[in-house]
Length: 187
Image (cartoon, rainbow, N blue to C red):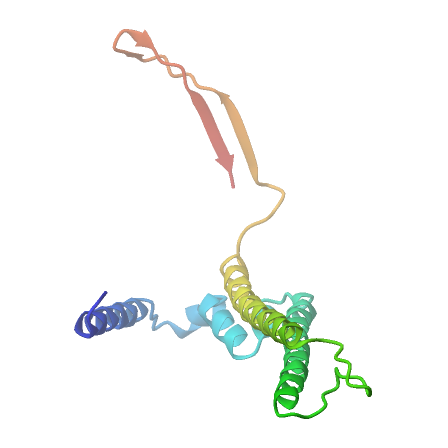
């Protein structure tokens, strides 16, 4: 277990390193900065508003995917929260001596107390998993924007090739002939 002073020192060192690294990346030539497609800007835009980093990278088709993914997880989280609340209220009403929605008019219970508790646990777990899924999807779209921005100026022309051929390496090493492979990558 770390003591509080060690954690403070680690946090201070981490922040100092991050500040010093960001200081090295500054460039004073404004024209050069305007020409470069900034991964940092794409990451910040995507973190502020999901899908904005994809728009900055001119990958407009990814924006609906981002919103559908985050929206679907959020909808499922709210739906599971509503079901959790429904079963929780029924459990509370039942233990206060009232008639809940899972009790028929003649007093017959559709679900017993343990079934209500199990349902509450199930919907709570599903809600939590959906919230985690939404956060993971949000983080993945930030990473996607950063990676797309880093590869924005990457050459993907048809002139890329890889040629593998036997090497003409005839040097003798320790009186044993050496066989090699020559690999040429054309950009």
